[in-house]
Amino acid sequence: MFARSERLKELFRVEITKTLTSVKDPGLSGFLTVTDVDLSADGKTVNVFYSLLGSGAQRESTQKALERASPYIRQVLRKRLTLKMIPAIVFHYDDTPQRASRVDKLLLQLEQEDRPEDP
Image (cartoon, rainbow, N blue to C red):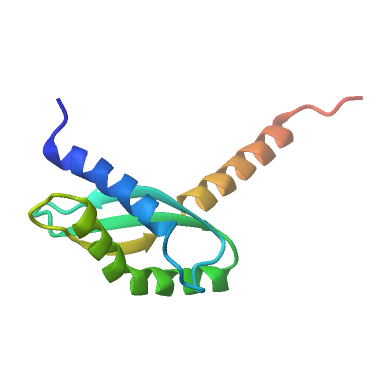
């Protein structure tokens, strides 16, 4: 059986993702994906990690928009969920997809260098 914190993390991930579709902020631009959710040990903070397909300017405007939307998302969660305490929501940009893509490109380059040239 899963621990309560694991179930809560999954619940928050699903509900925050749903709620983000209803946020009407012009600062939210690009393709936003929630990649992970981490609940603090005391349950008072949920860290939401997201990735974004877009430019650096879009990343900055999206971060600010998510910070502005955080109280709204918490309010929506308070209405939807029957939990004693709804944690504070903190958004963090997750650059793992970009780093993984860079590693893939480097590995592909190494593989191409190791191939013997055809005569």
